[in-house]
Image 1 (cartoon, rainbow, N blue to C red):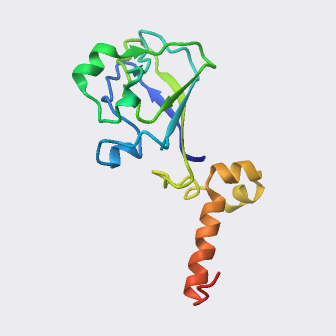
Image 2: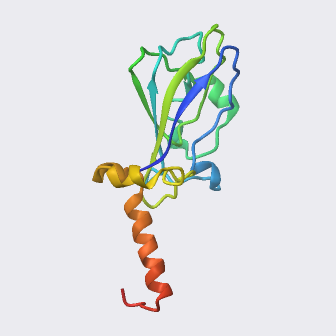
Length: 169
């Protein structure tokens, strides 16, 4: 797996739903979506408690098996808020229909989102684009793998090989 995105998500007081969706790369594809292999997994780390009042995410259990874009009527019948204590983690399939709920509280609700995909799926935003080389140089082999560094390095070597006319590897 490689890391596609990793970001803070702040749902401010009074924020409304963002809209029922599936995650990248599925929303770039034409349905029906492939059931296998899994193209994306989202991990949500709860920095604060997720409550009924502060915009806890809403998921439609089992909807990833439908391999389709969200059906709003069906979503509204089966969707459930996912609440939990700070430090808890939600792991979801990228095809599972989900949304945020309204933050009725007076405080922002903070979480950390990580999206992971197989190496053959190009990340929506390459995490290496904004990273200083010195950080990459100090990174462990596992972090380099998660960032897709080896893939970028291998791709660069292939391009250099082709440019030099050495087509035999």
